[in-house]
Length: 257
Image (tube, rainbow, N blue to C red; front, side, top):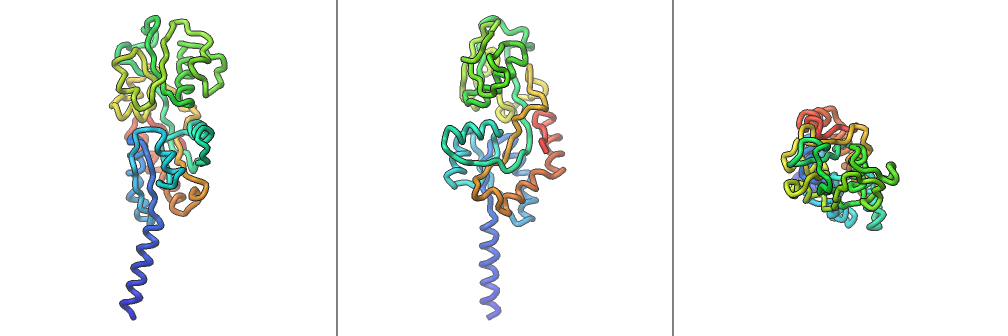
């Protein structure tokens, strides 16, 4: 009887452990790195964290919406809002974690003032990051938009373009790879870091710490309040994580909690 009870206890313990497994999609840098940092602590809390690395901004949301994954960590709220609207999903923010200031980079010029007439400029092709890039170009004085408060501005919304910049929209992940082929590229920090760019040193202009584009942990309404998810949120909001972000990314990634 004792052996039988022990066997039942072992099965129950295994089932409890399995129930507390979280599989989270993330882009490699810095999101997956931050998740890997909190993994050992979560294990002690009874949560097995599995990190699945993605290179794009679409599949992580699709996989969570279709319940293939539990959550994702790669995007900001404006992007999530636009994705939900466009795809008919209802994913929700669970917690804000950090800010990745968007920057403008060039392998040909040291200052924005050096950009020639008709310079080739590339920006992300998704609505929110594209608009974000245009707002940064306006802040730099390179263009003027019809509405400086419209975060979904497109190149068609440019009212003034004194240098005649030729602005093209490309998938965000490809921008570091074309940096040497263009005059200026506006690159999301996660992809800049993957390309070994140092936003604090290499960006000719970069968003300030007041940027509203805080990166968030995202889940579904049915699992956002689960015990395991809330343990992940708590783990991501510790002083240790804040210190890790500040030390590892040297200002390229800024804690937002």
